[in-house]
Amino acid sequence: MALLGKGVLAIWNGIKPEAEDDFVAWHVREHIPERVGLPGFLRGRRYVALDGHPKYFNFYETASAADLSSAAYQARLNAPTDWTRQVVAHFLDTSRTICDVAWSTGLGEGGFIEAISFETALAPDALTSNLTAQLNAALAAAPGIVGVHLLQGQTQAGQSQTAERALRGGPDKVAAWILLVEGSEPESLRKLRVEAGSNSELERHGAARAISRGLYALQFALTKTEIANSQ
Image 1 (cartoon, rainbow, N blue to C red):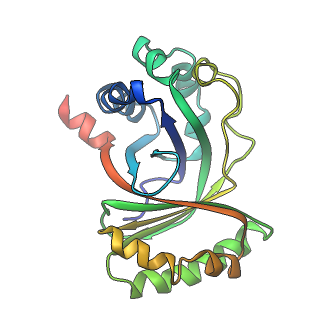
Image 2 (image 1 turned 90 degrees about the vertical axis):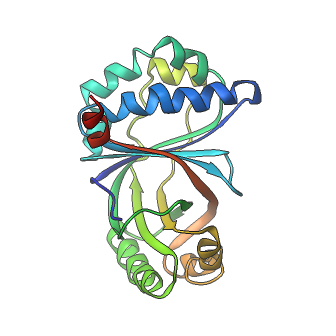
């Protein structure tokens, strides 16, 4: 389905093996519910890699990208819980990007997602026009593809030092552009990789420089409505 809002926080991370079980439990029991409960946050999802790096990809959908710089969110980033401090110190290869939703379409949700990051020399409107024309046709033609989302990274946003960032050590990586393709089965996404969603096709429509991609399986998703209904 189309994304729920106009903002996205996209995060890739690895985790040290000795902390992985704790990470999985913390993410589901505390961290995602805490984040989705914040003003403007609408849904959080976590995926695990079938063939991507780092191992985990997760993203939060927000009403707007401004919600990812709000006072309420900054307060949480600067007051991590004890469990957060315990887990985040074991993160590896973190990439964290605040994004505007440039384009989003689809019906329903897929259990698998191809997460692609890239740069471009084109103006944002030109890139969006090129890729949406290409991918709309692919979405209509390919069985098993249920959603496509194009995100423009705010590469200078969210870079202030916070207590959580200090736990990870060093600056986070950021992505200029992110393309998410949702599918009902991994085979549909693998097929797209060699057809309309191949690196060469993306480059032909404006993507450039070191396209990075990975196929991920959904592990957990939570919406604000589900939190409200559980209380």
